[in-house]
Length: 313
Image 1: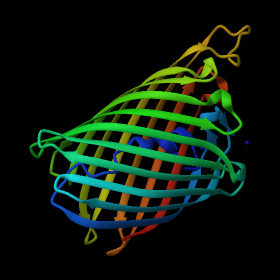
Image 2 (image 1 turned 60 degrees about the horizontal axis):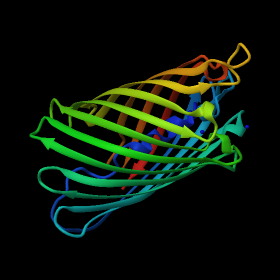
Image 3 (image 1 turned 90 degrees about the vertical axis):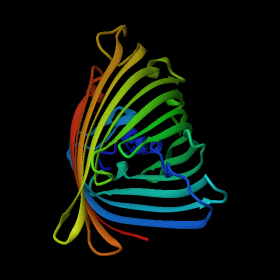
Image 4 (image 1 turned 120 degrees about the horizontal axis):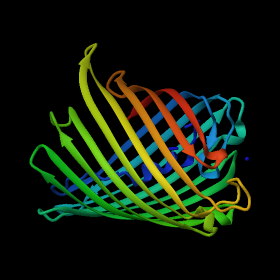
């Protein structure tokens, strides 16, 4: 020639796969309920990049973006919740069309409330295409436990087993294991809360230079407030990852390669959600990413701004 955008850090694109898509509360038996969301938007990225391929252009570009989500939820018996869905995202760049990214993701989740805690399993299967060609297949299974403590604290711990297959790049195929813990502190119910989390990951790739261990820490603040006769939502987040590779990388000078790769990644993002009526809404967002690495092609930063118009049912 991947994010969770035209900056399209591909790792960022898939960060959402680790997030719980099933409500953590289970209730009385109900029939199926359905949800649909669609978004159209425009985005500018100051440095179009493919983080999973350690490639960046050093140049900015505009892109049109499309996001679709369809989801169904069912509570067949008391305390048991089933949920499944499909989402699709697409970027269409003005100049760098080789970086046009389409992601198809299917997911399924089962959760049971045992009173003392809720236990569940979340599965994700995703395929990503770059410029119309299959690029990456991503499979993840993640069992988890969660617990609500009164009205002020919610904890969720999870293990995730992930398999990545890169089409035409078998040296990057990898399996990883991760442990994650997230804490939600409710300051004013769901109108104002803080999320703190940490994750430890170990990834084993086909090529030794891509094996790594990492620690990730994140913080997020969410505030809902009334303005112009509607309830808006403001979000502010930060994430830091310290990633150390296990073996020397052939592209890190001086030769012969004796230095292992080391990355430090910092992302700060903010978003404002604005309702435009009963069904329609808009999103305005900004993200700054600083990717520091002793591998030159993976050492860069980016600024990404976006605006989207959406509808949900």
